[in-house]
Image (cartoon, rainbow, N blue to C red; front, side, top):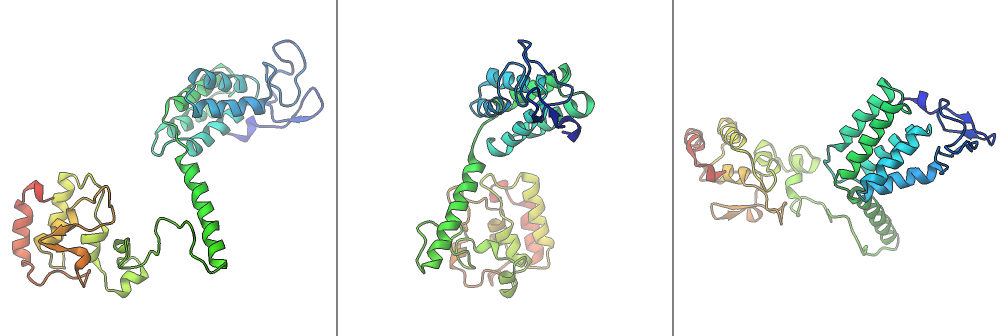
Length: 289
């Protein structure tokens, strides 16, 4: 959106308006429009609120009309302002509609005029795309929840009490639930000499789907070529997908639970030599990954 399309003008009531200077001064009925009136005789604040809530509720027709009404009335900037707010406030994470809105806005404001018919079509398209996307208040709810918990923690600390609610990381210390975080990239991990071996076998593990076949093979070979001497249990641990129900837990491999190991950065004493690891890594079944 360019600032050229949001210029203050004087409405029929003598008040400053955010309406485009190219917009009509009278409504559909021939009556003079106040500073924030739409062509249909509605308040642009009300129509803008309707646009976002219609999108949030997946009401396609209402969303399309609200976008059209604002765009034709000289408030196209308000359409793009609301739709861009929607994609961060009311949209499930990862929805590609955010890029769609951006493209339609570029077309409406940089290639064409936002209030003319092609600009209005872009506004309608964007509103429909948003209304058809998966709505969710997850980011907004998370932001408000974390903010409230921060206040609860601060108040509890001031009273020297335990907070009734805490952040999901809890104490957040080495050897705790999030131990894998404290590798050589952190001060605590460096103090524990947790170098590349620790990162390979703990910090680099991926989600429940596990590594794709090519990636798993490359990781096996990389560990065989590495200066550290990894055995097959190390490789199994590195490639074991995390548990969906316990993403920070460590797998049990070779009869040894990582959480029971006294030196999380070291390999077992009975590890195979590098040549054997290369042979085993290159020929192992996919099930090992």
